[in-house]
Image 1 (cartoon, rainbow, N blue to C red):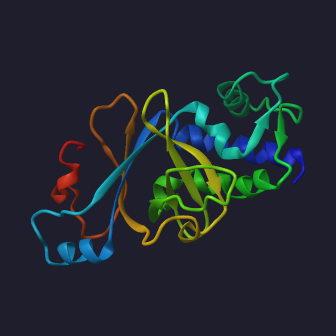
Image 2 (cartoon, rainbow, N blue to C red):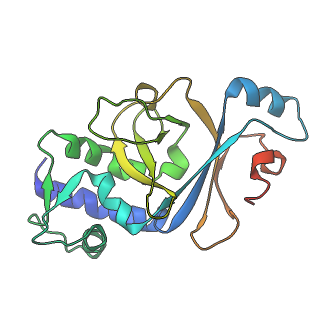
Length: 213
């Protein structure tokens, strides 16, 4: 992949990140279908057994998702890189692509995964330690997935990689089904936006969500 095409992809993806994810908290609501489906089908007043995983998307996280390395003589930080992407000022000298081809694989799914709030269907514990990366949790679908780790400074979960892989191949079994995805601005106290939700699932019945909405 030549660098002109790379810049085109990254510029579009940065705008999507800005519109869809930047400075947002996203909450994945997930569980085991064999435990959750009977409760929904039987119309139970409360739904138990669903777990929550909260992530935050900072401006500085965008670089990690591209798989690129900065040319430190041209760009001083991940935030500087992101700003240049948004402003359409990124040049071919600003970044270096990984020699092992991992940058290209990430770029091939980068734009699609900027819509993770709508497209993620499964979540699980990361298990593919043969890769040259470490993530704690991974969310996505059969086409691509995004990895997350706890940030050592904020103690919040942040995105740290993209994989052009079926999530079932890189996470511990059984993978959990995502039943709902919520979002809010970073400064907001409660979750106000329902990005996706399983049909017939009433969020007000979910015990785990009591303090989040």
